[in-house]
Amino acid sequence: MTTHLTPRRERWLLLTLSSIQFTSVLDFMIMMPLGPQLSQLFGISTGQFGLLVSAYTFSAGLSGLIAATYIDRFGRKRMLLTLYPLFGLAALCCSLAPTYALLMLARIASGFFGGVLMAMSQTIVAEVIPYERRGRAMGVVMTSFSVATVAGVPLALFLAAHFSWHAPFLAIAMMVGVLMVGAWKTLPSLKGHLAADGSHEQASASIWGGLREVLTDPNHLKAFALSSTMVFAGFAVIPYITLYLQANAGFRADQIPYVYLCGGVCTLISARFVGHWSDRSGKAYVFRRLALLMPIPLLAMTLSQALPMWAVLVVSSFLFVVMSGRMIPGMALIGAAADPRRRGSFMTLNSAVQSLAMGLAALVGGQILSRDVQGHLQNYWAAGLLGAFASGLSFILAKRLRLHSGSAH
Image (cartoon, rainbow, N blue to C red; front, side, top):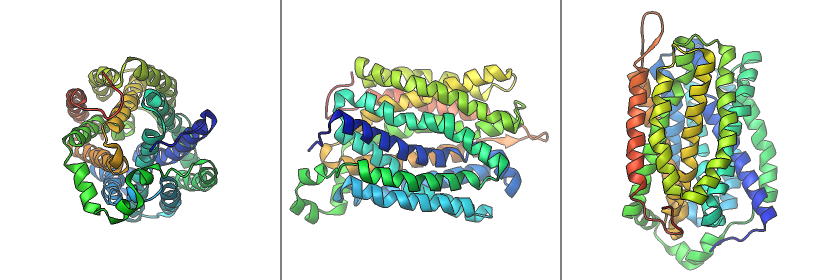
């Protein structure tokens, strides 16, 4: 059963979901540019920093697997308003962590709640917005990544530079408190999926039986494979950009925000264009074109140390545009591949798959990289090559999905 909203309510819904995604994306993203500062402060290696990034994503993957057993049994609004304050509390714990070990525990807690929030937002869009407008709607929600990059990361780095690395996480916790009030007022009840299954059936159905339905559907497995290769491609490289630019390209710490500012502005502009392009030309068509394009900026980024600063900014912005652009038609395709009766469980499992793929990519990337005696990162190009291979696999997988609504051509 679809929830029908007026255009005004639909806009408020998308704005609310974008704001919630903004805080969860920023909480994840801010760890990457803080890499040099945290590595020096705690005296950790590149691999240990990669583990700190992976802890969030592995935890998000685990929480997604757990959430898939119950997410379709409750209203979407109720679930969102339960998980979001817990996420804010975890961000507050990050802001208070005095050691590497305690920060690791706080990051695990953040991932546990943050990963499910992203799945909830994507599920709501897939259920509420008609397929013919879903590319544009995903584009609106996905602008949270761009806004987090344009405004969130530079501002968080400013707070970290002028106060301490704890300050950005405190700011995120405060934003969650404010946005909770807005979400409570603007979100509809979103219980259509419960009516579709029937209350008696919903109460008596086997939890694991529902999961088995999701996990044994061949089309779902193809969608999960597409999802994992899609995110693996970027996260073999992205977490180490700041470390690479400061160690190899000679960037100062105060120049790093320009990378995120330029990349974010470009993706903010391109997201709307990609959303419209996807609705007009077909989600699968647009995704495959961007997947073929992805290896170029990936490899260029890992070999950019000899370029002037303006050229590095062009390369990094190109990478951000292509990487975020793929997610718009990609998530629309994946959402349409789900059995509508199990979409909540499917999207939550998909979020878990994405989180595990991100964590694996960051972990493998950290193991590939090493430092020479001058402190320069070595073998970054190999991480880029691995990401390029994953992007090629996503191109192949996108052609094999069967959609439950509309056609992506």
